[in-house]
Length: 230
Length: 203
Image (cartoon, rainbow over all chains, first blue to last red; front, side, top):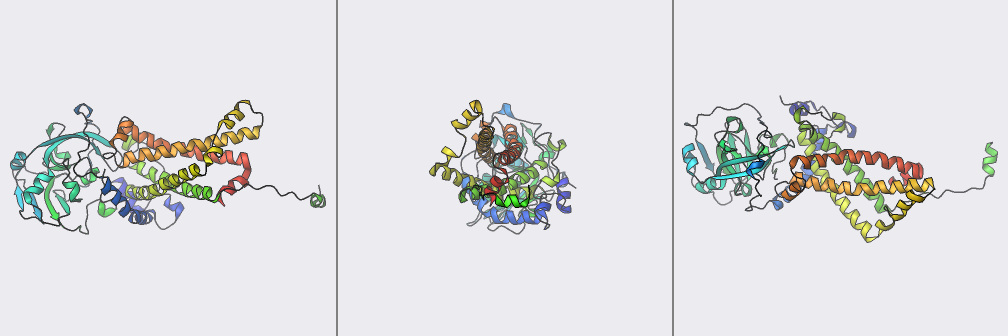
C-alpha cells in the first residue's frame, strides 16, 4: 500500500486535528467541492485548445527524473495480439493493431511531464496525435468526453478539447527509444497540458462519451481533481 | 504604595492604538488564508519533498493540512483565490488611500536607524521594514505558485526561474520566509506597542 493511501485511510495526520475533529479529509473534500467548479472554469479558460506548448531542446531531456508511478501491477501485453479499441459515441468504431497505429501520422515532442506529487521531468514522447484517432472514429455531435481504459484496469476520463490538442499523443516512443513497458508500452497517453495521473499507460480502449460518468478516473474517484490541466 | 495613593493619582487614560477596519479585515483574511496555504502546502510537499525526493525528510503531520495529497491540494487551491484576491484589494486600497506613503517603510525609518538615538523609534523602524518586506514575498509566493499550477500555460514563469526545480525551491522558500516573518513581526509589534498594539490589529 502506498504511504499516502495509508495516511488517507487511517486519517492520520494533520492540522485538521487542530482545526476540528471532523476528519481532515472530509473537510478538504468540502473545500475542494466548493471551489473546484470555479477553478475548473479558470483552467478551461487558460487552456489554448490549438496552441502548442513551447517545446524544449532535446539536450534538456532528463531521463533520470521521470519516476515510475503505478497504482497496481505492470501488465504484460503481447504486441502481436494487442488491439486498440475506439468506440462509444462514434460513427465508426474501430480496432487497430500496433502496425496500423505506427502507419498513422507521427509526432514527436520534448515537453515537461509534471506529476501531481510535485516533481517534473523533461521527456521526449513520440506517437500518433490522439485527434488523428478520434477523427478516424468520427465522433458524433455532443461527444464531449473521452474515457481511457488500461490493461491494468486503470481508467481515466478527459475533456474532448484537451484530447484534440495537437500535443496530446498516444505515445509509443520515449526519449528516442521504443516505449519501455514500465512507462506504458505498447501505447500510452502523453501530453504537456495535463498532470501525470491523467496520462494513462497501457491504454487498450478509448471510449467517446457525451456525458461524464460517476466514475471519472482511478485517482479522481478517490479525491484527485478531474480537470488537472497544466 | 497603598491602594489609597493609587486612587489619588489623576486619571490619565492611555491613548489606545486604533487600526482602520479595512486594515484589520485584510490582516484577518491574510492570517487565515496564509495559514491554510502554508499547512496545505506542506502536505503537498510531503508527497515528494523538494529536498531529497521520496527519501527526503517529511514534514511532521501535525503541521500539515488535508490528510493526504489530494486533500492538501483541495485546501491549497481553495485558499489560493482568497489569499490572492485579498492581497489584490488591499494593494488597491493602500494605493488609493495613499497609506503606502505613511504606513510603510520610508526614508525616515532608515534615518532613524542610522542617526537616531531613540530606541523606541528604532524598534518602530525595524517593525515597518519587516512588515513592508513581507509584501514582495507574498507576491513571490503567488507568482511562483501560478508557474507551478499551470506550467504549460505560464511556461515563461518556469523559464524565468531557470527550470522546474528552481521554481519549486523558490516557491517552497516562501514558507520559512513567512514563518520567520510571523515571528519577527509579532515580537516587534510587542516591542513597539505591547499587547495593546497587537490587540488593536485583531479586534
